[in-house]
Length: 264
Ligand SMILES: O=P(O)(O)OC[C@@H](O)[C@@H](O)c1c[nH]c2ccccc12
Image (cartoon, rainbow, N blue to C red; front, side, top):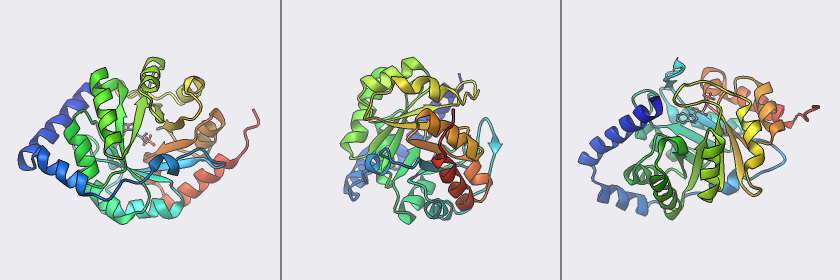
């Protein structure tokens, strides 16, 4: 199973980092940071769709996407283009990211920043905060229930916002049980890499009012943003289209597409 491999690899890499930088040290750095931003407020439902713009060099399903020699510059273009938050892929093996990318981005932009990785240990959550992240991704499919609960609690304890990612009705139920305030539905199955752009629309009615709803992946054109917005997305998370095209112009056209009233 691919998701299990990705998670095992990410945990392995974190264990290697922990040899050089023990947990107590990272914890100290995490607690010394100024408070995390209120990402939930930044992503709250509004008259306009909001975008989490992702810094992403590659992916196992799409291969190499963009070099991104200066991730902080890329993120600052996202800020200029009207993004509401930034996502930084820190997984090294298949996505070509790093914690250094995350740190560079949090130093440069004033928007809330998400650590996008296969987080499965408290160490990785502490690393996220120590690097200045305001949000941390937790993928329901990749985690045992107890671990998910522990990590969710730790993210909150550190003042960050968990983005709880789901891909099935069962996973969504788990996210809701957890009390997640920010729930994502990923159109991409992380084990088969198949895409289902209509999944968000099929699951959205199960998400309780008061939860911020994020549609993740598969936005390549303005019409895809309009599609997710019409289905009820408060926020859309976009990577590939922003790293392969002009980030500012693309964001502006995507935000405008979200304004269009659906006729169906
Ligand atoms: O590049 P896209 O199709 O716009 O997708 C962005 C984002 O949703 C995707 O990178 C993603 C969603 N969930 C993840 C979990 C791990 C790694 C990556 C992801």
